Amino acid sequence: MTDGDTLWVRTSARGALTKVRMQGMDAPESCQAWGPQASAALQARVMHQSVQLQSKARDDYGRLLARVNLGGEDVGRWMVANGHAWSYHFRHYAGPYAAEQAQAQAARRGLWAASAIEPRVFRKQHGPCPHSAAFMR
Image (cartoon, rainbow, N blue to C red):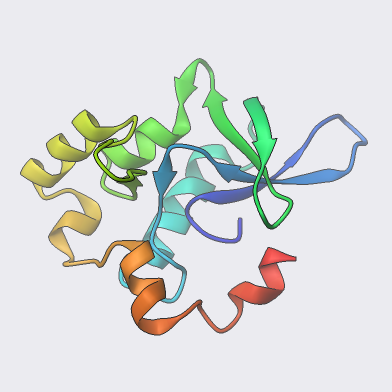
């Protein structure tokens, strides 16, 4: 794991590792409030597990953009529902996990109890985490 929304997936028993950016959600940066907890939650959920990827694109950093499923469960949805990430939104679209985010907020789960700042706002205010550039390549 590099953070709470990016993971490495081995595509076959002896295959190379592929860097995957989870689609539909945005977890805190590793150097911001709730970042380490989000990363630990993702790691605990998927480490050494067989996952299924649904992807159509790569991002500007060459990462595979994908929905990650574990045993039929959408891991991004699980991350948002448990307060480890935001539903990825833009303009007037609340994102695919808006209902899960609203429930997590109401219950003050995870980052909603920690006064975390949305990652895109954090990056505008502080720039990327010092080590994140190395992980992006």
